[in-house]
Length: 130
Image (cartoon, rainbow, N blue to C red; front, side):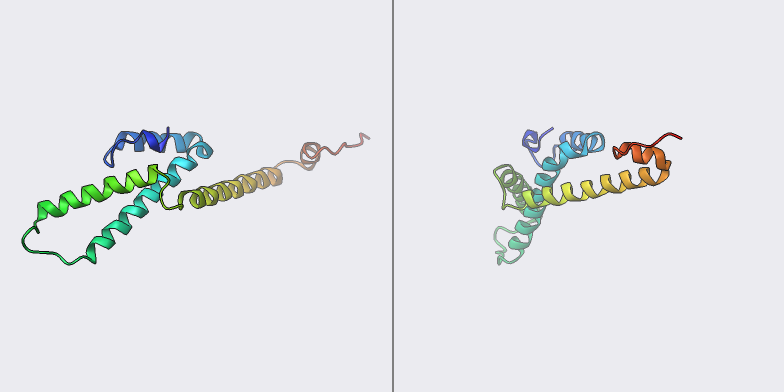
């Protein structure tokens, strides 16, 4: 599953597939998750940028605001597909670092639970038999 398969902002099927992939193989889904997060960030940035623009009463309506929000969401998705603002690689690196720390913690917990002889054998130490 790749974020590039998402055709529009409201494609909940691909997001559900991404969630399933993240549950089964978290390392494979990291880049897609990072791109989706970058898309959300860009959308929030565009939303805040729109607030700074003075509005005219001539074209202002709730329908127009709804279409602008939809447009901004689609633009954010398109920007993240095209490489975005460079945030996704940093997010992906952080996710990889966190998942690596979790794997190390799980290995340490398993090592503490294992008997000493099994632990030493896993570490390539040979035990002398008495």
